[in-house]
Length: 213
Image: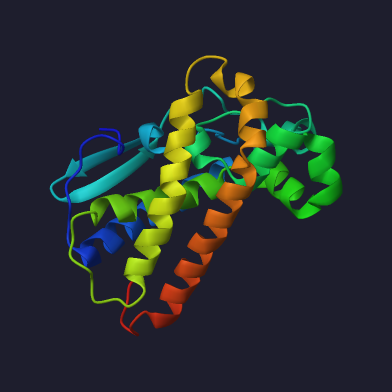
C-alpha cells in the first residue's frame, strides 16, 4: 500500500528501525539509478510498503516524471519544475520564484545540487515524515530534544501542506506564483527549514550511545 495511506502508531525505537530499514533499502536503489535516472517525484504516495510476516519492503513507484540524469546536468536550466511541492527543496522554490539565472549566479552550490542530487532532499523529508507519522501519538520518548524536533517539524510541514492545498489544482502553482512570492513563502519555508535542521542537529548530539538512529 502507499505509505501515505493508513498506518499505525508504533513505539519510538521501532519507528526508528522502520525508517532505518527504509533508507537501507532505498539507498542502493538510488545508487544504481542515479547515473542515468532522476525520479523527480519522491513522496509518500509514490512509495509502496509491503508487510511480509513482519518484514517491511519498500518500493519506489511512478517514474512518469523521471528524466535522464545525464541530460539533466545541463537541461535543468530550462527543464520544467516537477513533483509534489511538499517535498520541494529550497532550490526548487528559488528556481520557481526567481529563475535559473538567479539560482546559478547567487546560489551555485544549490544549482549543483539541483543538477545532480535532485531527489536527495525529498528522500530526507520523506524519512522524517515517516518518523513523525509513526510516532504521532507516542508519549515523549526517552531521547532529549525530540519535543523540540516535533515542534520544528510540525511548523515546517504545516506550511508545506498548506501550500500544497493551495496549488494542487491544474495551473494552480503558476497562477499563485506572484501571490506566494509577495507573501514571502520562500523566506517562511527557509526559516522553518533552518529551525528544523537545528533541532535535528541538537537532538543528534543528545542521542544515547546505544542509539540506532
